[in-house]
Image (cartoon, rainbow, N blue to C red; front, side, top):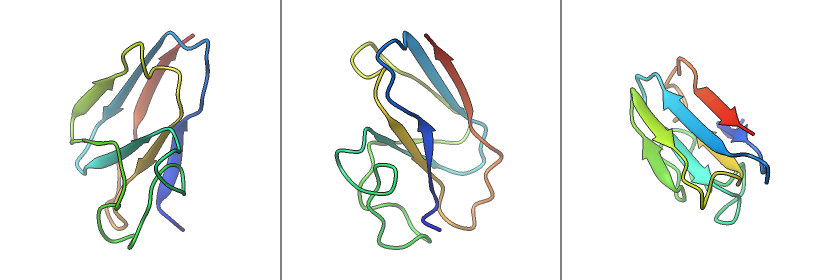
Length: 93
């Protein structure tokens, strides 16, 4: 009901992580769960951007994790009503 979802959990053996947003909507990403609830987000409404998030992965955008945050938990959120075409994740352990 919150509109949030877990992208990938903590894994200290993970060596690489790539996330691709095929679009056409903004994908909000929260690194870890330290800043909020519901997969790392704080939401005031499921029809708008979250109050807390780490960054936005824009349509057709790719995120490549660096060595400082490759192993942490990632959460995702699409604004309600934006029919996502999915998220592609490549994790290397």
